[in-house]
Length: 147
Length: 398
Image 1 (tube, each protein chain N blue to C red):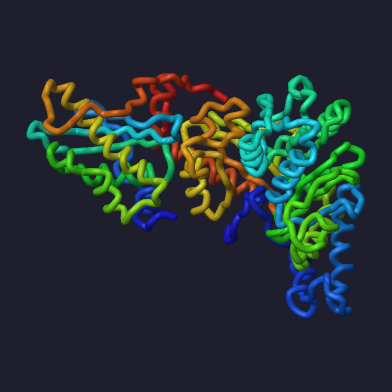
Image 2: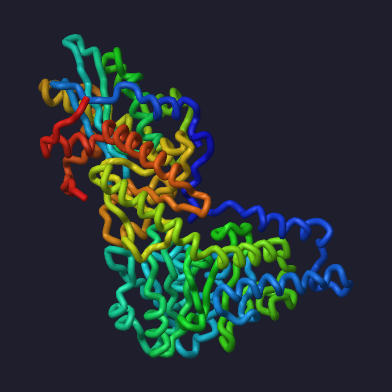
């Protein structure tokens, strides 16, 4: 079902975790559809992404695309990171099954959401970046229940 | 562990060697068409009827009331569509539940497009039909109640006898999809008052591509597949002789071993359920704790998603299934899990493990250990868990 690269990034995901005091954090997707991605960026004063980490709730493809997206934006400038599209993520993973393409879109959105957060925190405007579409915090409803 | 741990017996089962052995001659020297006149082929007629008798015996049914089909889905389609047609003068209303297999649900949706009215009953939090709601749903135009014997996902066994009584009191036909239950739990169509019953060969260590519909004598259901005079003119097509022979053999073995199997599987099932609930935090059991199939375990792990769980289990040679959207090919998780009231994100984290007579305690032990590791790994990657931990100030080990 999945390419070797997808399986590799799923089983050995790169850059899993959190960044304390991150320059920007973005969370996209929602639990209802079964995919949530959170991306942390550490951006230096020259606008270069020094570090990137993620946490993802989702299927194998969602985890693999998150992992690959972090690899692709690391070391890039903000402008370059904006060019990391879902297509680029998919190509880097040697493709995804058609039903999983939305996972790669989520990865792109997660990068954008984290950059948007960075821009808001620093009071700057990033050319070509619009407010991310989905953010779970907008309609947070689920209280974690203990079973 | 150096072999595959197969915990997906509700999806399909391994054909028993005795079954394969019984079938093999019917591919080779006994290849004849049972409808042919010459001796070697017409002997197959007797063989087919012997298999029919083996199956009838498991159900306490009359032999001639068993009609072979190409599987459970065909039997379900036949029962519903033919009943809707045969009883249209009496009415056009069918009652079923929200947790049926798609072979029933999609057939009902098809019938709705052709003027049939369908009530889809809710179930309680364990997945059992509420009998008072069933009674209330019956109308003068109700012609059929179709409720599954046991659920394929959560294993809950329905109060079939009570349902049949209600149907009888109101003069309504009762069909049950027993694909998961046939050969697993005792069924007595006479004693329980079942009018029609669907079953499938490959769920009880028989072959795929063979099933049957039991139709109580006297029901005027038309043929579903038109053509030759096979199956007492009710189901045309040259008999799937190897399939029928295999199904008969599988049914015979299932009946002979049922008690012992159920005892063994129930013990392992309960061990699996209890250990998971005890050793893994934030998990719930789906389906009734005791009124469930002897081989069914269905649990939801909070903060993780089912498909990634399945792939990681597969990498440890453990085969299971999930009601997550990612495994259903749609954005919605299992309709059964939603019907028992689970929120979407909990349904996405469901895992079904269905045991067989070959499952060992060692395999269950191994599965529990691997599950603990995998769930912990996926939670360490989950933003939902991160939020939960932050909110509840749960100390984490590094």
